[in-house]
Image (tube, rainbow, N blue to C red):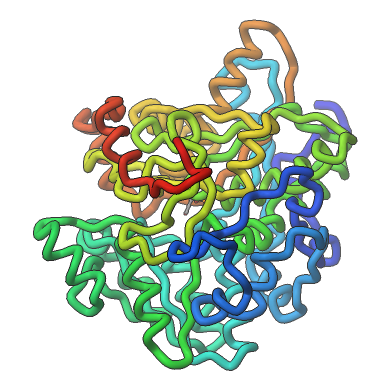
Length: 461
Ligand SMILES: *Cc1c(COP(=O)(O)O)cnc(C)c1O
């Protein structure tokens, strides 16, 4: 073993942690298209957004020119309770694969919420408190975002109302109880507590819910309750901004050892971890300083990038949210019920959508049984039990490493390991029992979703 061997874990000192977030949009020539008011089809102004979102977050959402934003000291103090997160070298996985590739991963699962989502939850709760609000509302699917937000709200003494997709509420009682431990109020969605919930239940009596429904309910409660605002755990520009801490830390760690990744891979649900991980590297690419390959990995059962349309669409099923221009499957699209692996949102961050559209990024879709094969191989070699979402990135990283084995190329691969899978054991069980199946939507399934994309001049699909 040579003396300058790269360590298994590259840690940073607290003093080396980023003190600013990085806003990729500042370096994009083609900026992401603005959010539109669905009633007027005009770009949303700060005044229109302020009744829904916290003021400072609205400012961040609309700011496409400031490259660096100071991380408030209080947020830094909470970041220090679980960050810096380690940048790991996957020596054992490399050996098992017999690949000449060097594989690194940034591990974001080392906090109680079990994922990267706490990075933005802390920021959003902090700004809500600073504005003097009583509380926030949100939706959660698998439960990671709800958990992260519950933690952040307990730190900043804010009320937290979570609408949890009904199927997850029933299948993941432990997640629900973690949220309640941190003081959150958790309601299965769709519910009879909101107008939009009642309407959805009347139209689809047996529905087990979707993220889109839960968003509609959370927004309704936020806008109708004094002192409340709505917060979202992914998709929005502000969330990508906060998540840039992932990529900034990774870059500092890799730079210490003069490591330059050739390929950077992340799973893509709404795009926040991927946008965060790639941020400083994409900045270099956008400024023409360096080149990297970026790969977004999505489930074949919810293929927004690889089979979606680039168009203005609703972010929620109830169609009360702003329109965002993004790769979308249509707000009515629901992944097949046998899809266990998360990443089930119908749309995608408008920033990442624009970057993908302009050829700065690639995307692949992978089937869930192959995702769980990769998850298991990773667990058995590297020890960490990965979240199904994260395992999409593992799958793609392994596939790239196996290509290197064929060609003999010693590429450096970096991927985001966004979280742990302790609450996903039903999905692992289905995989182990051989009852997990793959479902790839047919063209007809997709056409149904596309039919719900709003039609107006300039938004032809
Ligand atoms: C929420 C989540 C994702 C997907 O969300 P993005 O916004 O696309 O990052 C991925 N991994 C884990 C563990 C998550 O909790």
